[in-house]
Length: 599
Image 1 (cartoon, rainbow, N blue to C red):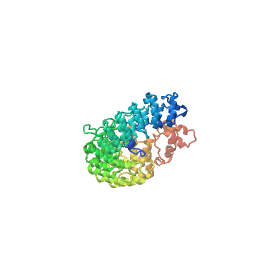
Image 2: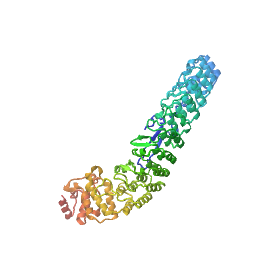
Image 3: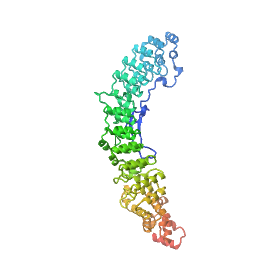
């Protein structure tokens, strides 16, 4: 997509932004400039900072005041008609901008060569004569003195551009009759007809078309006049901006979008209908960051269900199904338009089987794809329409479990989401009642399948102890002792799969949870302790405090250790001190014997 210009000019066009997985950064479809998508207004000199009067020639001051006698006297005294002020304005610029015809006549009769002099901004007297208070007699006077009708300012904005921007049809008519170039381009490649469209002036567009304005010209971002009109929903002129011999209705802008896509993004039902009547192809798609998007996707993403209804009948669903990493159902869920969701499900229920690429910073580490139900639960669970939307998905055949190994399971999505307690409780219980498997395995843990819900609860929401208790209550096979075995097998097997290692922080939380919930398998607890004791203590090697508290070790609770002297030594001695440090203190003989044995 074309990025916004650094010089502040509002880019014109439609940009698809893929859903993000930050809860505070909602997936959005946005249009640069939207209905006000015209380029930055080219400021006339009269709009700039105040003139420094101390540097203004007396002749210019007299002209600005409209004092004809003073102008006549100063010219007679030898004042130069081409003298300029601090912005490069001559007296004739002042007369043209203010509409003082008599002053302009005196100046031109004194020096006819001043008619096309330009200000510092490149503006001619004729350009400045086209303004909100334009007087046609000043323009006519300048044109009769052969002023250059096509001489633009520093941005190559011609007097005709200015007339169209001001919607001054009379000015534009006079300029065109005097030979103004109807297709003159400014530095942004906009033509007068683009300006007339941005102003939504039917009369101005008709005038320019009578003077054979080229309908194939491209303005900012490669917009034809038809695209510019579609972009703002200017349906009154849509049919006038294409001809059978031109056949430009399906041309694309630089980003690949068509006029139909722009009309759909703007939510313009009438414009969309007219474009379809003109032969717009609803099956054309464009690619953005590996995503294929057609008009139906954009309609589903919007807030106008009637656009979905309008496009369904003219869209080849087979081609939509082939679009990469995009699904109209998921886009309708994003906008939470239940009417659009239901229409799409009735027309093409096979969309339920289509997933999009998972881009969540949390879920994408483990899953490559996300379907309609997980997308709804992860991003939109807290919205009022979420439950009815989920019921619709299930009604039309959406599975409450993942379809394949690396698709996000719905239960994992709601567990990992940022939804509040009440929402999570409601959806977890609802999904389990509908047959969701609470024990579906975490994909990177092949030995003893760790439930994905448990993993995300411990890893993402460690302080939500109620969530783990809820998951245990709906689990068919999991209890604290089983979880102990999972921790043991994690620390035993996972280190051999370096890129897929379960973080120690997650294991620590699972271990703490076992103690809180109650366990009975002391044998596995002891094996976990042996796995995570500090190996550097053996042989009396020194280990500083930073190493002792490193994340590579679990904190083994006292409840895991054997009783009596061995408990004392393993908890207090081995966990906190090196043997060489302890020998500095007066210790019981039994402790010294144990230290000697350990050494």
